[in-house]
Length: 586
Image (cartoon, rainbow, N blue to C red; front, side, top):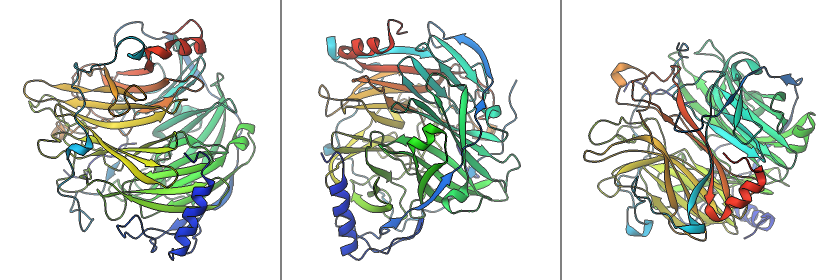
């Protein structure tokens, strides 16, 4: 869900966690809590910031609901070439009004030194190795949306196992059983009850052969309504019969008068990990984040459709989002940049071994960056073109939007940063890599351009531990302009330092707006999705969107979008992909 602006290796990790927990206790960290942590006296790697001490999770059981058989729409072939009446808008999901920075010492001058790397290639000038090393689209599918409602804030999510694909958008969902040749729609507004809106995320659990589908529900009588999540699963390839579990704020120790939003799911060894935010609406329809939440749910329980054990914590020292890295095993991490102090100078990691009820906290210093947010005067991103043709499509995006991956004994973290001067004239992406054995920072890099903005970044590991990358780009200088589209990239043995990239999806129109007076202040949503293609080394599945034309549209309108669902990798790995799906590899 997006918000409207107010008026203007140690692969198994147990040794590491024991050492970290002991260190926190020896330095006088606060006693374990019971779900929600406040600040305690633990210290980081020399900066001396205050962070919470070891925290004990609360536990409970999620009750399964009866299996729901979803009503499907017509099966529709995907378009073979090209990029192939309005619903009433829901109340504006706005944030509290813009004001001064709450951080007493915000970053004014970021680090833009050469040590953070050179710029990415410009659109249309992205070189790629030839032959087996060429970056290629193995499958390039435009998803036909025939059921539900398609809005310009698409926020697509997807995953695939073999020939079976499940995909979601903000208010629609589709599946394919033949590797994207034909698609069947589901209407998320009708499957699990009323009040659906709007975020959806999907993830495949290959071990148990289950497709997980996380949906967000908000009370229609906002403001003052309440909300909840539905975590449902179906057999991979079925996609019609779903076992739902309802998750309310009370599962995290909060009142059910509150709501949840900005959700994600990741698979670990034993648990499915879910992150969300607990939010509260004011009488004007604005909302504030009360806490961020992290839950782990037993995968075997979910797969069996029985009461599912869970553990959960909430945090008030993190003000926006938590994200668990894709690729974790028996130690979960959750990363945040939206810390309560020191924003723009550090990242915070929560560390949670699967054999422990305790979560420990580690802070790490990073090169200074300007924290991007539309809630602080002068801190908003500007992704517009300099000729005024492309609007500010990232006006609502924030540096709290972390994407993370674990691979080859390292934790990869990415987040957006605000533009600065001539070296970073557009919003860009910061990449930080930590060594998993001691959680020390070993690499910092900026993924930036002097021609276009890069935002909405997502990363994921493949089966080999290489990192796939996806973001949205747009902007332009001089007389050149680029409507928001999407770029893919790969960090691997061929390009370990700077990724091979492909601006595979050009945009044809501007982001949506909320009102005529906000015409230059656009919204592109909250997230895109990339995942390593399971059981296929060297391949990733990703989904992104672009406008089909440049008419001015309201963010709540029913507007056809180009929704791309692709598989990509190096040409050398095309054969492995094609063997995994048979000869049909559209």
